[in-house]
Every structure is written in structure tokens, then in C-alpha cells.
Length: 108
Length: 111
Image (cartoon, rainbow over all chains, first blue to last red):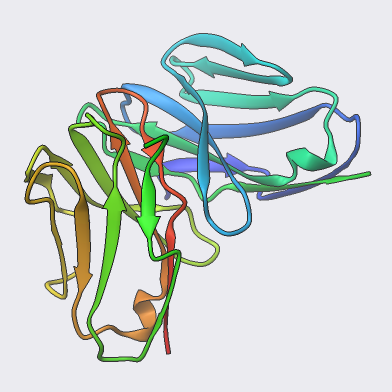
């Protein structure tokens, strides 16, 4: 069993739809990261959170430490949001364990 | 520099050859990480430097892989006798403690 599980693996939606990507983990963590990866491999860090909720523009990330679960939400989705979204958890040594990613495709 | 840079962006080599991949971290970041991402997978940890020393190299798959960071800044990942299974995107990240900032990656293809 993977230590970090994401769902769904693939998601196609229409422009404007509200998007939710889920992440569950089974290890103790110091922080959880949501990352965005565009074709070509470059990764951008979206959020790092250890409790509660963070918001940046149309992106919202929440974490429930007791349930070992996090969600990434995108409001008013746009084709430029199309990317792979990766959930990753950091242990006390900051070594990151990555999920396999969710491939999001927003249709115009 | 503005962010983490990696060179080359793409590297194609033949099975059995030696390759070096370079990472320039954000200035002042003491921690540096190497990850490998195979097709269809999330990145996997390879090695972590704190300053000049490898604090954790437990992710290196075998002794063909080696990484150095002699002056605590630039790091080089070295792969000897490359195999087709080494083909992947190699990602580097640096940190001052907390958020890791990722480079654009080097796509390695072993023919």
C-alpha cells in the first residue's frame, strides 16, 4: 500500500466547474504539500500546510490531521489549471514522500 | 538566482555511459534534495544534503548512483554505467528549512 494515496487519478471537467482532489496518507507527517506539475516536469509548490486551511486565489487546501486526509479545491476552473497535481507529505527529516499525482484536464 | 536551476534540461545517452546532472540551488539554502520521477509515477526521494554532507542517501537505488555537494551549494548527481531503467525526470529541490523549492528537472533518456 502506498503511503500517500491520491484520488482521482485522472479528472476531466468543464471550464468553471469546482474541482476537488483528495489525498490520504498513512505516515506521521510534519507538513503536507500540494504541488503542481506541468508538462516537461517542472514542479511548483502551491501549498505547505500542517493544519487547517489555506487559500491562494482560486485554490484552497485543507487538511484534517486526525483523519490523515487533505483536499485541494479549485474554484471557477480554467483550462490553464490543466496540470498534474501532486500531494506530498514531509516527515520530521523533511524527506518528502509523493503521491502519484492527479492529472487534471479542464475543457474550454 | 531567482530559483533552483538544473542542467541540462534534457540528456539522451546510450546504455553503459556515464552521466552527470547538475543542480544550482537557491542561494543560501542549506538543504538540497534529489528526486527521481519515472513515467506515470510520483517523484521518489534519492538523497538529501545538509550543507556539504549527505544527511540521508537511503533512496539511491544502487552503487551506480552517487551525488556530491563539495562546497555546500551546487550539487552533481552522477550515474555510472547507465541502464534503460534509469530513464526518468531527475528533480532537485532546495530549502532553508520548510518549503522545498523545485527545479525544472532534467529528463534523462537512456537508449
